[in-house]
Length: 200
Image (cartoon, rainbow, N blue to C red; front, side, top):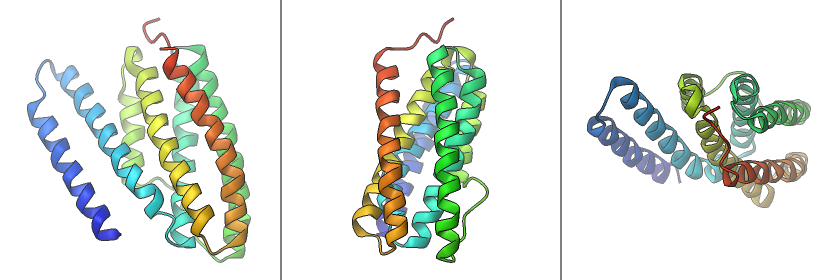
């Protein structure tokens, strides 16, 4: 499983390098293109990492916690910078719901003697950096694209651990959180289909 993950990540990294070399236009346009490619790569890696992250209770807790930290930070940024009021509201919902989920995970992890990370990993920090670097005109689109990929990854993580996990308390937490995250997916899809106005 790990070998497959590393191989897929390596292929995606090569694709990203090609995107960086082929991007033309003004420096700002190049940055936007590179950031978009980085987000796509991160999302593709996440689609593999979601199920893989549920292999053990320790990896599940770590991946769930880091994913939650990303959601809270991205949500704070969206609540401040979103151009469409619905994107601002979505960001605040993410902050509230993922903070609550993270808080409820802590005692379960502690009772199983499992460590919870307190900072983002490199991949999700890159997503936050790209979100902060997005222009006002592109911000809502970038946020929604990241959210679609992030929630797909989280659903895969929660579903996989719920089916294969060996800690009943964590499986119950995964099931409860999965309901919330699927609700988030519907919100993101609805905004994406509505083509929120990012040019205001």
